[in-house]
Image 1 (tube, rainbow, N blue to C red):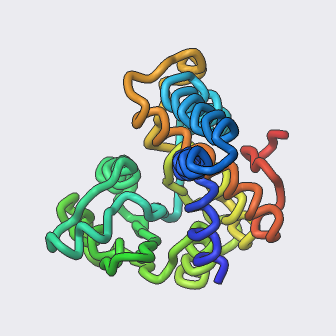
Image 2: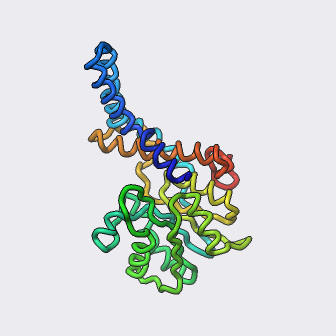
Image 3: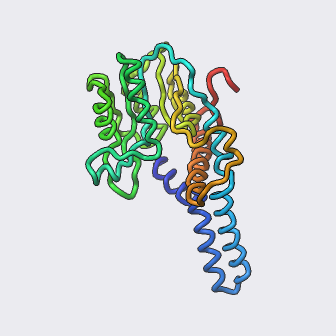
Length: 268
């Protein structure tokens, strides 16, 4: 129920959708006695679409998320590699019959090198199909193909194919591998998603997490003043960052994370 509700609610909260809906509402009002109000609403809709799409607003929103967890300079000994789903387009995969990567593809591509550096540890991919409107296959199917292409032996591959959210990633994977106290687990996901991922895994009892961020969308704080070349580019990033902040708030309110903005171990 939480998964379904979150998808529906965010569809209407997503800034790009909400602003288009606002503009349509204003257009309807122009055909009524509230003509002037309708014109103002249409103007504000277009104005904010431009601001969110072209100004640095999207980068300002996403940068605190991306900068929260720096990639570790050295990894030391680890006991397993966990990759969170989100790198596969399961709808396209179902139609084409082979892996189809999303803009979060780096979650998968970094595994080739890490699996070589740590040849004796399990490689775990967690992610089912998060689609609502179209039937897709499990992300696990794409992960299996890519892992084999990377030369990873099947005996090392563990696939969790039921989860549809970060919360389920953490819980289902914990139940599957039964992590032990003192073990160190490399956790791979997009930089902007790492705060929520770490918060959920900690709340689900995982210890010894080593956050390994990837898939950055910015170069760093220098991009806080960067404007975008197209409205669609900036809006897409703004939607992603807004969704992650809403996700953090929703997970905190529902008790799925213990802090509003999870931090690295030892940080405030």
